[in-house]
Image 1 (spheres, rainbow, N blue to C red):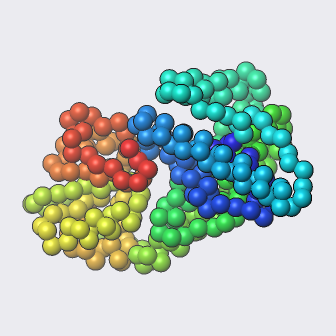
Image 2: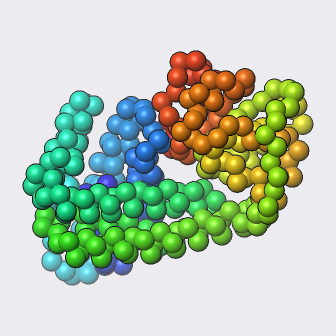
Length: 298
């Protein structure tokens, strides 16, 4: 996505943008957060889509330059990246620009600050994606993702420049957290302190984990009146506090603890499991046939 943003950032500076490109960059960043996607085929598909959108972003920039009567900037590096023909080739390409390669070329301090920024924009993208699902977005946030990714292509960044961009990332992250809070409360009401049962109830059950309240809501609607009980797990626990979700009587309680305990707890859970957005670990064979995913998680 760095190559996409090299063109998209310059196009934006000329007053031109593309919503498909903006949303894809958010989804691509979120997909590579820890515990979101373990499926090589899905990741390869996303990489190949990135190559297509890089071409689209390049045309967007060139058309914007022509319209403005400016001189086109000749870009290199990620802007000229061409994906390998197969998965093994893509993995090799990744290693060539990975942490070890950059440490050798740029040193530990620069590489460490680059990685801090990468992790920061990935985390910010996770909040932004959840807000997008509920119809909330901020054009300034899209612009920052492109700015930060474009900045990360610099061949000789300084510590001060990287520190400044990391601090800006923190500011944008607070904006996105506010955006997500507004999205959640607009859709489901302001959360209230709620006692959550942890004892099992007799009957068929589905366990829901992750962060996507919209997916939980859809499942609650589909199972309403069916006799199936819905339990939350891990990061989905706060769902019980939202008035528009807690009104469903078959949202009966919470099972288990944090996401890192899921392999043992999912094995012992007697029903189906739905993972939304992230927090999945590689499923064990003992429950692999009854775990399902939605959104970007796989």
